[in-house]
Image 1 (cartoon, rainbow, N blue to C red):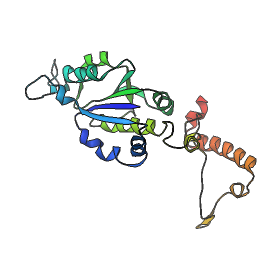
Image 2 (image 1 turned 180 degrees about the horizontal axis):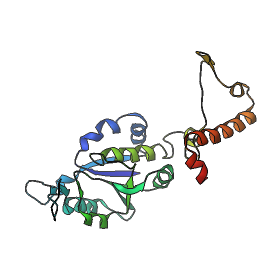
Image 3 (image 1 turned 135 degrees about the vertical axis):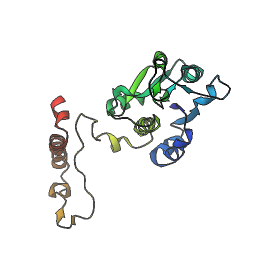
Image 4 (image 1 turned 90 degrees about the horizontal axis):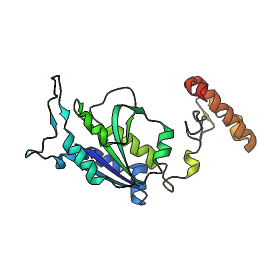
Length: 222
């Protein structure tokens, strides 16, 4: 998979792309990520990418030309253009599973007060990571890249994520490791029994209880 990120702050991605699972995906050539400063596509002599809004109002608005020209330059027949935007559809695991099969993603990071509305005519989808406002689309773009990278075949073992929260519409079951007892808190006996059928049933029940306790809205949907 190739991901091109259009941003005014490519340096923000340096640490993110050189750590943990994302780095593993890149090193194993399962993923290629390019961070492109769309200021380079500005047609103005000072590489300006924003301007005051028509009709007045506070803040600065991203101009059409730099972003649209960047998108058109990068886009191929198999590309999917995603705008990270608080007005987009809320991101979830189902969307991450869908995006992992894409060949090429172009992720647009907004900034300032907003972007010229005409930019929307050149994107395929708008995605939000939640009902709140950030200073730009860089952190949301990292969220999307991280969640997709771990699902790419061969990056991590399928068994590591197949039972994750949200994979089957429920939260994950509780997990434990050594020691068996810590400050009076014990690991459930069934997990020490070696009876795989009982363990499987226990985990299924605990996933339901965990979801009911913490995210009953998911249980109602399921």
